[in-house]
Image (tube, rainbow, N blue to C red):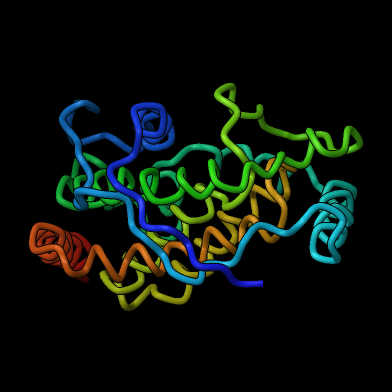
Length: 242
């Protein structure tokens, strides 16, 4: 089912604070309060799918998938999912980018991702507030999360982590073409970590990944984003030069 999503003005203070919590881990190139997103307002998305209705087929499939993923957890996959709790481009994608790319060696990339991450928070939080879908452990006590649920009660749909992972993977795949497929795969797996750990349903993850595409459309229109993107591109080309 698709619905018309209303245009949002600048997020409220509570959304802004939650957005700060969502993205503060990625700030490595400047103090957190020095970093602002590229966009002046949250992104308005038309015809974005609503959260699955309680008791619907998608909702029931989600609940079954949550228990199935839990049953299939391995220690290694749990460890990766717990590491993926951190919103940090260098730790999340470092296994693909390689040891040359760090916060210290790639400050332009760090700034690009830090600012875009603020826009992820501003875009996803109004949707969470609109749909208020309870996270899997709150809907079914049989679901045992392998990371702590957010203390501020951020809702389940869409997944902000999955949105962030998809956005970062898309940008990195463009910036480092030689590793594009591996970066995209890492981005998808990063989002899957949220379902593996039982803090999101598969449909939450898919919705977050889809929402990242809408955000990127708007970011690409911003001249400051374009300039920072080109700076990060040049920086990575120099760092990864054979």
